[in-house]
Length: 486
Image 1 (tube, rainbow, N blue to C red):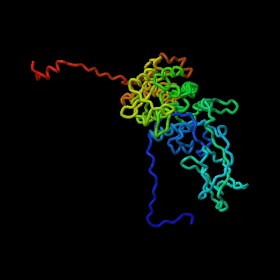
Image 2 (cartoon, one colour):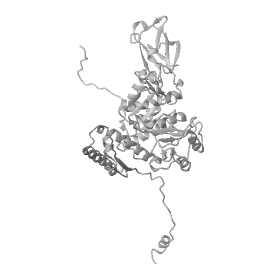
Image 3 (spheres, helix red, strand yellow):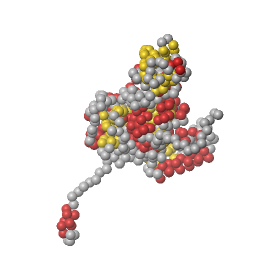
């Protein structure tokens, strides 16, 4: 019989299910960096392509996951998004290439214990490179042994066949990925004219065509503190696919920016004066692991948006952060009071303060204080305009190439006014309307296939400075003493 026959009562146990996540795309994170792809099912398929993941399980399968955040920077955002905030999806772009970023491990003898060999002195081993020998005999995978990784990401060789039962040791030769060989140039990437392939930040162009979702936040925790990378991120945030825009989360280097008084100078030196940039300082620590602030801030942003009907209208300042400490790269703790944190806000930097737990602190994009236009200065205002522009492109794409008649114009005006009014009634916009001006849409324009609409909208500014004026009123004292008698 092909199936086992059961009769009676049986009980099976399973592990606790992972807590469900909130899903949203208005704060979609696109994260560029390195992943432990030797732990993935297909390491070669995880290089320089956008990979959309809805859970840590999916990320483990497609990219690999470990908590060596300093070495594998994508894992910072995996932890922040799937574990700390339980928000999805996230797009990852891994630049670590096993064909280039690798090192050879010489053959070495390992002892066999209970038919298993644990290669405990090496990390990053690529399964397809492993050669197991006994003497001069080469053992065959899936016949003589199988390969797996334990919870410490070490390779485990489990011997299977009868001819290996008596073995006390085997020789193991392998190749490991080498993340130390990944460079700034790998993160920046580019276009190879010989192969037609894109790499690094250039792969952002592929996110929408491949996944159908529009990038909202560009991150490179562990890398964006390099101003060469940060400047390219800002450039790539505009004109994505010729039409879309995104915001960039940019860390400042805590090795160089050790004091809060250094921040303004380093921000200026880095050239971060752009409305699409959100500059962050310092780093954070979670469960004993250092992590770049951008990873936590990106997850918190995506979670805030998803919990707000997937609309980025809420300000991200004074929001709880799931972190234990604010730190520098060397682990030195940072404690700022509100006055010091406000100094950073005044130069266009978002930081964090500890008041009833750690909280984000700051509402200005990196364009401030050089630029003070309302639309570009305030983070939520800027993000609402970016999101509105991107959503108009995706929502009305199906209208492109329709006959330019009154029915089309009326349909767009009606549907957009309904959408804007819904945001106004929900408190997500202060006001908004769409207009079609016949004088602006001349016969010549119509004949050339162009139809122009104007959308007017106002996003809310933050109640950043709430002032209570206290005054001593002697009349109240007199009334108290006299019982109100004249």
